[in-house]
Length: 258
Image 1: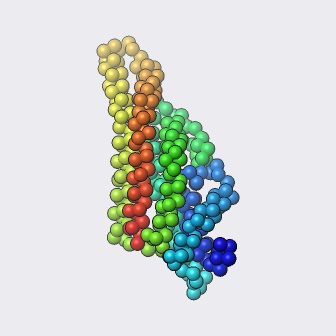
Image 2: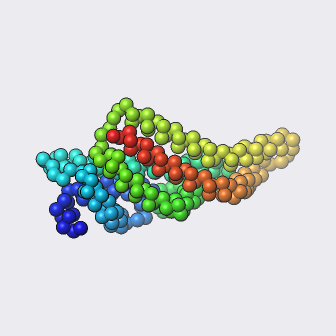
Image 3: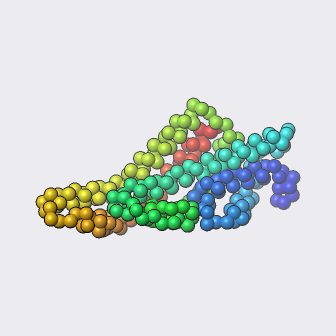
């Protein structure tokens, strides 16, 4: 294996750059908490498993006329890997975006906590749902499926060739699907909070001496958390379906890059 890598180091480097591109963007690997050395080591280990298949099928060129041609090919391979990781990241934004839809309605919109994985501030419910989704992603062996997806990408898209006709439609379809799933994901909690707000509004009209502003905060928070607890089983079944859709969309998106 070592002799093969040394003899065809350009192919090995192209595979490594694509996998590193995915690792730099994709969830689970792209967190700021993981040192860069660990990411490079994991990408190198994954490259050792993918490189023999790429070399045996002759999917990538072994020699280049100039160093500029090799540099452009490296950029293209990194771009394909980052596109793969970005699609996976877009599906993870479902959990963050859906939480932002209802945490303000619950009265938790002013509470921000530090997300240790991405080193950014996030709302309380967004971080809770992101952690829950990440745990389910690991439980359903999502990282392995992403590695399989990047391996298949060498067969589907050995080189980056953007086609202006199909790519915009693929981007629009992907974004619309993510927004649709985000709304479906959050509708039960939003529905309960809407009913809670209507009831509080009726109480404020029926009993003006009732301080709805003071009463509304604990009632909305309690209603939101109670609904979230009831929906945990629903989330447990829905989140794997979202991840299955993510891998399907990755395959479809790759076909638009041919």
